[in-house]
Length: 134
Image: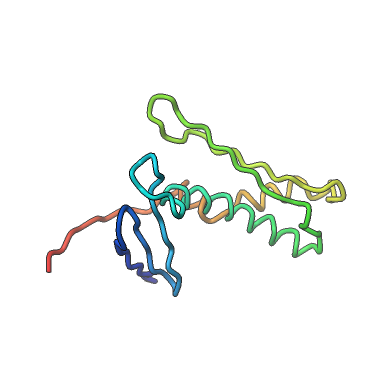
């Protein structure tokens, strides 16, 4: 079993930082929720991880085939439920330049669909939350 560890600290206000793999990932809450809005919220990072993961797979697909990506991008739209305020739909659109080979259009969508963040949402891990004093 491969166990990864992350240390989460509270540097002040509503900021929460995570130390992971040599990086410090900083979060804050939006101003309208009492934070300073200095950096993305944890939920914003979650959404960004979905979009950038799909983007990575598009980039890797194109690089493997020598297809330029300067004019390519990925747009992600989220639809929230009015009742629960939870996101009920995530739409990811890959914007490809005119010179993108038509024969790869379906394949690049399949590549983006293999995003590991999306895979973990589709088959979520078990969560175990405990507390320890001292």
